[in-house]
Image (cartoon, rainbow, N blue to C red; front, side):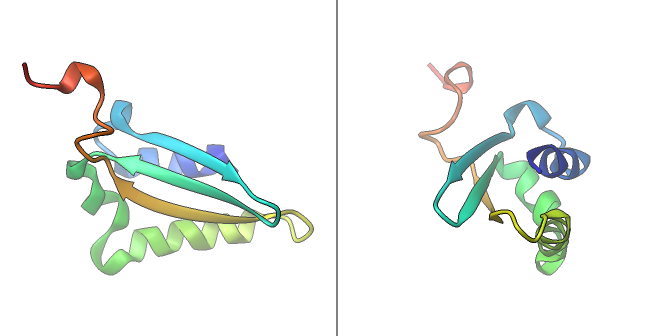
Length: 89
C-alpha cells in the first residue's frame, strides 16, 4: 500500500527527493504520514483538498477488508525536520 501512496504523491510533487514517509502501526490501523516541502503542499493536496481526498479514497478502496485500516496524513516539512544540507550557515 505504501508503494501506491508513493506513486500517487510522486505524480504531483516536484521536489521528490524531499518527500518522506513515516509509517506507524497501531493495533487496528496503519498511519502513513507524508512529509512534503512547502512548495509541494498545494500540489499534493489540491484545490479544496480534492487530490488528498482522492488519495485517501484510493487507499481505502485498495485495502483488503480483513486487513488494518490505512490513515493517510499530509504534513509540511518544518524548519526542525529540514535536512542538514539545506541549513544556511
